[in-house]
Image: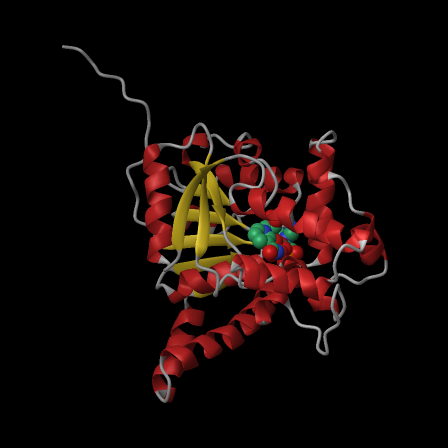
Amino acid sequence: HQVVQRSYSVQKSVIRDVMVVGSGLMGTGIAQVVAAAGMNVSLVDRSTKMVDDAKSHMEKSLTKHAQKQFPDEKDKQKTFVEETLSRVRAYNDPCIPAGQADLVIEAIVEHLPSKKDLFHKIDKVAANHTIFTTNTSSLSVGAMAEATERKDRFGGLHFFSPVPVMKLVEVVRIDQTSDDTLESLMSFVKAINKVPIKCKDTRGFIVNRLLIPYTMEAIRMLERGDAAAKDIDTAMKLGAGYKVGPIELTDLTGIDLAKHIGDAWSRDHPNDPVFKPILLIDKMVAEGRIGKKSGKGFYEYADALRGDER
Ligand code: NAI
């Protein structure tokens, strides 16, 4: 009688309970779309007050969506908003709800040691079947998985801002991600009414790997005085069919973010002229001209808005 040793692998799991860590711009949007799709969400930040503030913000966004979804049906709008919000619970410690989560989505500060520390802590209390994911834009997903004992149940779920509006989610697979984990993540993304694409754990995944060199080149063009901001944006909208031009896009996502990403890429690829630092970006950040959210970027704005309120 031969005993067949099988390595542990999670069956493709149905996800009902999701823990989202970080209730900032991305975490709030992610929690909102997950709850709106009918799943329970534990939303975690440093204090429950921060999560409650995030929930007030979510309420406004949900109300707008409900008005579009159920025009002239006030009762339905109200029920949708209330029911969605009732599925989101606030926590100040990820170890409390981690045990009941089927899926963890990390959306805390973009700092590898902080992310590793979080994953290491919750790895000890989460259930065996729980899948861990990160929403990182620029860090190595594999390096985060190193902090856990569940590398086969680890991956990336990269959302785009504003989360309630943007349809795409990049599903990132590291070398150890199991096929079951990958399929569970693909099904989850579809269940929250987004469109998943698969990619490997490489710098910038797909969208940013193509978009960042392109926007950097547009800013260099502006810095050299080859063309004005408005002309560059109009050119790419009418000549290449893009909905938003590269300069206005950078204003929307933030010049501070562009600097953060640009600095990291040039550090990692010092000899690649595509990622050379841009002095104009450094100057703008130093002056506090960080884009639409500050009222001033490459363009000027009458009202300073959060990026997700456009
Ligand atoms: P944010 O600064 O708006 O929010 C981060 C939140 O995490 C804050 O509320 C902070 O209090 C909380 N936090 C920090 N450390 C924590 C910890 N140890 N435990 C619990 N909460 C903690 O940042 P944002 O923009 O939402 O980004 C979050 C992540 O999403 C980052 O990894 C970023 O690279 C990624 N991302 C950002 C995008 C964007 O357009 N802003 C797009 C796609 C990904």
